[in-house]
Length: 346
Ligand code: 3EB
Image (cartoon, rainbow, N blue to C red; front, side, top):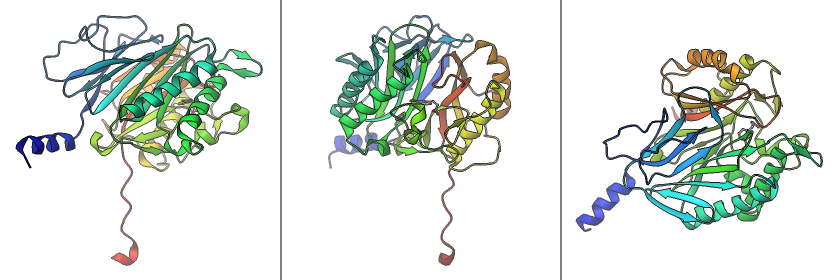
């Protein structure tokens, strides 16, 4: 084997680096070799990390001075535009960002998802994580609200692109609502597929009963990243839902504690009865709040659940069911214990 090939081989099996950082609007001075794959600006726009950085503008209000999220990767990042998607890749990871008008939500969602799934496949990548921001989520027409229409458009796109058994291959998702602006979609994809993970305290979202809408939401509760990303679990937007039912109406503190029980159950692969997470096991974290005034009490609960140093970004958003007041997502560590050897093997 030539030296060049050997070096290539080593490079391709080394862990792919992905670091998610939060910060204020002003671009950080970073003189390392790392590059920004995607910079997400919440609320107002600010000066990006560099003029060539892919920037996603997300029309949700940040509730403190942390307004920017950066996905930091190794190596050079190349940019490309395909259809309505702005893409950035370092060869190991692919990020994409697209806008839709935000009017005919069902039709627009189906169309943009079909194109996203085609673009990711054509580039030789696998979806790991998708975020959606949909304007006027609870506006109703013809007996359905816009979230239900979004879900139907998304389900039809997966079915058309992947066939009838698409649900088993879904990745981690978040879908929240904005007061105004276009529909926003952004995603992260990797070279290898991750392993979808369901939550033992919740039924899979794609099996929700019909009272939540004519097509169930298509997402996995979480996704264990491929080995190249070293034990990361992408935790989908998680709310105070047990089984399929919303819990703790009008009590944001109780919803937050229930949501954290769900996050722990996902990471441990079992209901853990309430034990705490250690520093770094769930970080960074993003919190979507229906009402800005809930920020301080939620921050207090999360500080005791996650320790004082966990980076948390707070955004105001509508959530998929009107009664939900808080939704929490983030990057977790896989805490599932390897199963012990069978008894008769000892
Ligand atoms: C839930 O558990 C809350 O439709 O993509 C969370 C994460 C929720 C993702 C989605 C919806 C979605 O049903 C809502």
